[in-house]
Amino acid sequence: MTVVAAVDLGASSGRVVRGIVTADEVRMEEVHRFPNGPVRRGDALHWDVSGLYREVLTGLRLASRSHGIDSIGIDSWAVDYGLLDARGELLGEPVHYRDSRTDGIVPPEGLYEINGLQFQPFNTMFQLMAEPLLPQAAHLLLIPDLISYWLTGERGAEYTNATTTGLIDVRSGRWSDGLTRHLPPGLLPALRHPGDPAGTHRGIPVTAVGSHDTASAVVAVPAETERFAYISCGTWSLVGVELTGPVLTPESKAANFTNEGGVDGTVRYLRNVMGLWLLQECLRVWGAELEPLLREAATATGAVFDPNDPVFLPPGDMPSRIERWCGKSMTRAEVVRSVLDSLALAHRDAIADAQRLSGKEVEVVHIVGGGSRNELLCQLTADACGLPVVAGPAEATALGNVLVQARAAGAVRGTLADLRKLVGRTQPLRRYQPR
Ligand code: LFR
Image 1 (cartoon, protein in one colour):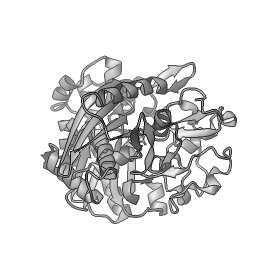
Image 2 (cartoon, rainbow, N blue to C red):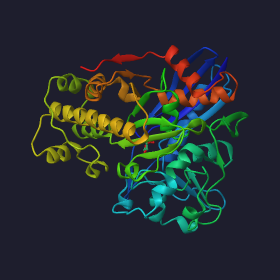
Image 3 (tube, rainbow, N blue to C red):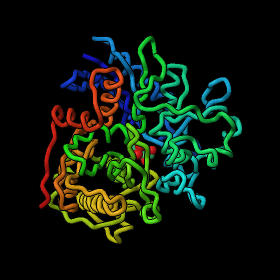
């Protein structure tokens, strides 16, 4: 039996999970959960990453209380970073990717052909163009790598998350000389890959996992065949397919599909769809609970809007923005229904585009992450796609984190397909047929 601790930092909550793994069983015990979110300081939106680190330490203490742990792995949302000075001190709390400092940024010509990334104004490379602290910085660490550094004293850049910076050459899988030319020399640490050792914390090995949360979530998709699409559904819906190589065609670029690095050298070919952020912000503004509204939304009539309109990116009065987009006022239940209908259609479009652009055929859609608990969204997605949906696991990211650590420790063996079979055998899943 191998026991590992998965630290999974999401944009709206973080958790530390104990994963107990044998060759044919995985058990997950959440030992600590804490809220996360944007913090406005002065004019900018930040993350309270020092506060998150304290929660991580609490979680790790709880995880090892009754039984020692064999390894620690860390994942979080992508693109954001901390800058360190030459002594290794953090230069200011990291800025949140929803901050307005990259508004209006225009990507340089020819970028997609090098990095294969969809254009998102918040990709690390664009944040660096607007970064006042850059001249003082000696080291850049993405959020999971920063937590890992604080735990171990060792710096590195985990590959799956590094691909979201926009600074990795999609063909070579290394930092691109051309794209990093303007950065202070030595700013970017050496790459490490999921499964690599990443130092020790109080004698416990820290193991690199798919430290981009979406990379870990895709590991834990319980696919039984090759012909699947996934929706990693949480704050964002990350919708796409898994490939063995990138798609860099002009059509793919025009459709804003990304080729992010996956575990075991795979490519996560996907599109970001705005996701449950829309609902989270509505609930925050209303001060309301989701469950009763979802029950009402099941029989409400919604309007359809484009969830990927950039007006929905920053925090704010989401219900008013949605009503303005749709050109009418709506009850709360109607707003919720509009969000779910619009997400279901955006899921359908992304899956259709992924198939068309990559040539990969899909016969089932897996919804993993917190959104897999939203029955109405799962059913509406099945209906829109005209494909069966398999929902779960809800904690796919933490589970993918656990599995990659367990494999590195020798507790389980095999390819991603083998890990996925283990997920399918051990986790509760729910199936939805298209109506
Ligand atoms: C999901 C996610 C997405 C990334 C966005 C911003 O949590 O990591 O994959 O595009 O957050 O980092």
